[in-house]
Length: 433
Image (cartoon, rainbow, N blue to C red; front, top):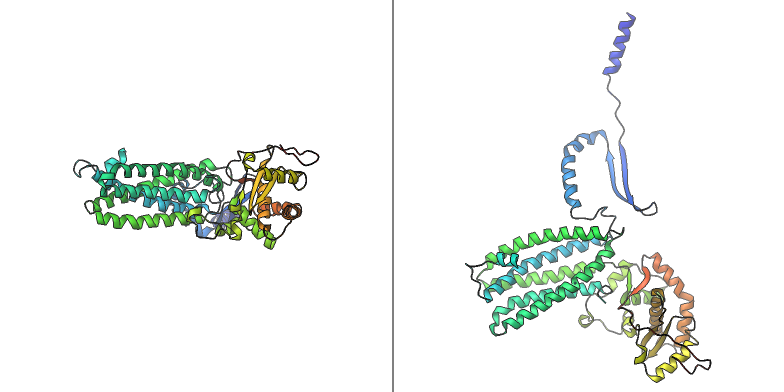
């Protein structure tokens, strides 16, 4: 009986339901070191979601693999926040480019006598890169030149006598686009990379561009077929696509928040710091800087944030006048005795002469000092004295705050400093070599 009782008890225990496992939440983190970790996912599991997980895991794995082919590893933490909006607008402008390319190619083929029966747009199409310092501006210029090249292809049939000349100008426009676009793309890829993953970002951009190419060519072939023999319809389609292309490019570069210091961004940062004692973030400066070329800008050159236009870095010493040299001789032994640069003010314009041993940090300091001088013009008679006092007191604080706000202060992004100088002042301050 005892054994039977025990056996019955064992059966009762074995038949009782197992305890319900508790729910769990896991946070996934990624980073190159413990000091640079970021959360990539939050995963929650409980018994009620077990069946759903089993049924959806296969599709989830499939879509995750698809996503990994188009975004860098570790996305979104491995790239800067402005990566996604830039890529969206960049893909849209690329899409319109491929569609318009089909239309312009169709017009070009018709102009050189390719018949509709002997050849098609599709077959002919298939047979058939100072840029890093102003990457946003040159990105717009490159795409404008590309639009110009396509427009010339479309216009060429209308002027048979100038057909070859128009065609050559269009080719030159696209050649410029290739150079400027390639150079600016390299600069932007370095900007996006937060974990030294520029190669991965570049590879995934290739996947995105391939997808945009396929979609754009498919739509372009369709439009080329529909508009064949209807030049007015071609123009009606081409012009709105061109307007959208330029708008998408503008939105793409506008959302970029570059953290490197070029001439304009340095001017904006310094001007705000001198007025408020604070440093703007890259996002705030991005909303203030201009992305259009100088010749296309409508703002006044007297704007306080445009003071950088009155500063010339790495001036050639042999281009200076004798009176300028004598003034530099006095300044070298007084205001700039410990500096690796000399500053010369002439009619509101500041000329910067860099020492032959000046480091990138020295060049950045010389440029900021020149901006301070520009800011003080017409306000005081002792420009060099007051600017040097300001630099001694505020420049170290300015650099520290720039670093804290996320700015790269290693160097100034400016055209290559080719001309440098070395100087020696005689004891009587009468000679400079």
